[in-house]
Image (tube, rainbow, N blue to C red; front, side):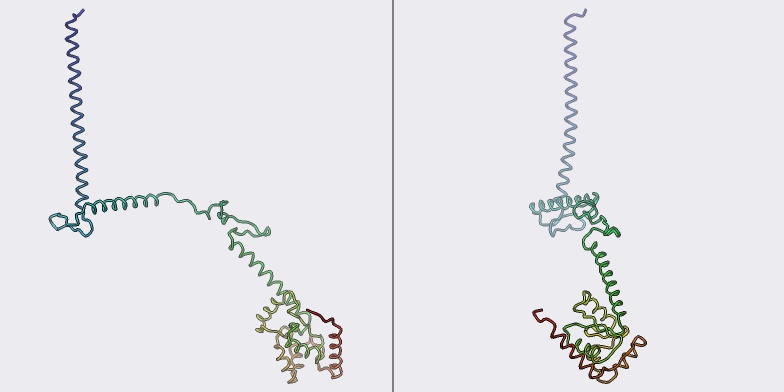
Length: 287
């Protein structure tokens, strides 16, 4: 068994070795830290020096010497640095926004707010139209317009079949009354001319527009013989005064006209008398 003296000596050597090891370790760490600090400091001061050398405002570098000439104000340098940093941050933000995925606009998303624009719905169980406001109404309005045009066309053709001579008139128009008086009372015409009072017809405005398209006359009366116009009240009166009305009616009416001639004076007087009596029998009052 070793003596106490040897144990003490051995312990003392061990303690000294530990102290020496700790000393060298701390010294190495300190030197490494000093080196890093010096490198960091050098980088910082180099960066700062470079920023300070950058010309501000109207500064310019002299050729060949690298010498900077400028305002040299410290406040200007700080302001310029902040401006450059702000500009760099804005550029980075813009680049990030460009790379980021963009969400779909609401109009492309079905079922959210106005996004139902993309949806389709059926109208009367036939065609499908987009649910997007005015665009959806256009096909419906076009269908209604086409349907109304077909109705007007059918009614117009039906009227033309009623008699060879058609008088398109308005009940309150004096020119219409003049044309009707000549064709219905002064002349004996078989088949009798058919009168259409446009102001009393449910499709009167549409029929008048149809007449304007076909004959070029927008006003009433408009007298048609087998679909061809002979004019209005003044035209009929002119044909009557020149004794050409009978020939005109026979020429355009053809075989459909059974009889066209002037009424005898007695028949004209009787017809006028009957008309006056009918007007007396009609109840008078506010209309």
